[in-house]
Image 1: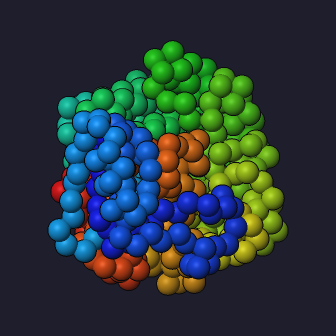
Image 2: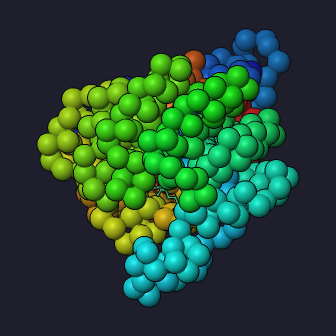
Length: 413
Ligand code: NIG
Ligand code: FE
């Protein structure tokens, strides 16, 4: 049994609804609190001194981790949408885009998703694994202990499986929880003759059965967009992937509306992006169990509008926030900075932001054991050297965690 504290504030995020708007007076904040945990699970949260006396009288072997200065503690974060397994770098895309070049001009100059495909295909498994582990460690240092990672820069059976095997190896080497997603349907590969529909059939026949046989991913994603796959063929593909036993998630409504409703129709766990979602489809999402995932890092990377997070919450949707960290549209990778900026532009409460990067984003990955500090939950939490939890968002990502605990073990700090 271990006890950590005393904390000036413990923000538990307990007793909050899964969907809809939240106000800050709904936040449970325990002053001078402690967290009692055993191995990877929380036993009790409460007043530090009371927990200390419980511990002293219980006779079991125990350890007290005593905070000497003022700290606050939050549940650790879940980044439910990343593309952090990749080779190469697209700084030139970023510079060209900022200098006013179009998508087609950037692609013609060797940029775009396809350039990341070429670099990823040319990278060895070892190179990919090393850079992936560095990115995972960076995310842990931000307090993110559950990370979704997509394939999607391989775009043929051998290369998609290579990416997913690298993600699998990373999973074995890190204490963070890694959730892999097969995004073979990221775009139609340029070196493949035939239609998008034929490529989707190839994924269903040649890639997904192997992904399943090797147990490399339980989730399938697709980019539905004019430049990628069309709503009709995508719906068919997703239903077949579901029949194969995969959970579904969708890159939806990034530039053009019409695909978030496909995500809802196929019962997707999440519809991500939604920068272009129209009011009617906000209602459809809000009536569904499909999590709406805002990706402010992509808005910031591309200079595009933010996801209508305020409207989604007001309509009653389940809103999560993720980084979309990828080499092209979202190179930053700092979820706290992005979530804080989203709060400013979309007028979200601190409770809505914190819920969006903890239990609501974990729910998007089918995980209901984390993102809340309460008995029985996973002992993943983040401490900050500050006396006020509001400073975490106020500092827009520049207040770094002091320590990050995963499964009750200090993994950073
Ligand atoms: O989520 N929208 C499509 N896919 C990624 C971008 C990937 C890339 O540009 O490499 C996204 O923004
Ligand atoms: Fe993405």
